[in-house]
Length: 318
Image (cartoon, helix red, strand yellow):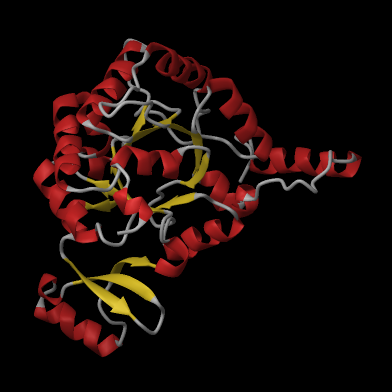
């Protein structure tokens, strides 16, 4: 048994999430190439793209010795004879739903799950538990396919069901279980604080707050004033004290496009870590931490920093 395996789920979560800079789960983006690139630039933790529970449970785990990866490949019995013939003729092979590089991602990989049912969530988590370091439940996605299936932000209006998923996973697996949410609509900050408190009482080992409401477009500015107030209240009212004792890490996410954004926002709201989505797509080297040899930027470097903020910031045309 390794040291991490002998730790409690909360201690492992603290080790993973505290003082962390994290690659966010992004559909069709947080796949193997971006995850490993982010790690090479200094990301402390990476999430898979959201993979729905029913999807991963229709896969077969295969060791790919040629690439040195663990591949979750769609099972043959999931396809019609016609599709199987086409796959065979094309020579492309069966679809790989998830590819993991243990030599690079071990100790740093969170599987994000789309789910709305605790039984399906457990089946999905059990399928990947040996290859990942934590399970995260998507409770923030507002897209129709997710909400119509009772997943994503649909869980924000159904705390008992959200808690049932967390409780079921915590009872049956030893890995940390976390949730990624958005600011709840209605009575602020009460609704969001009550929801986070409920998740933590159910056993959640970490919570990420996306600084937008479920109905907000990604082009609308992140609501940082609300997040600052929210996290400070969570930290000072005891709402994030776990059943095992100690505080549960709170991660913030949304529109942090530069190193200055990351440092300043963490200081303002006392968050335990930050999660980066589009900023990491635009500039994956944003994860590079300053070294001791880095000096105060000169005039040219300051101009470069201003250019970076204009190029990649919220008002960027990109």
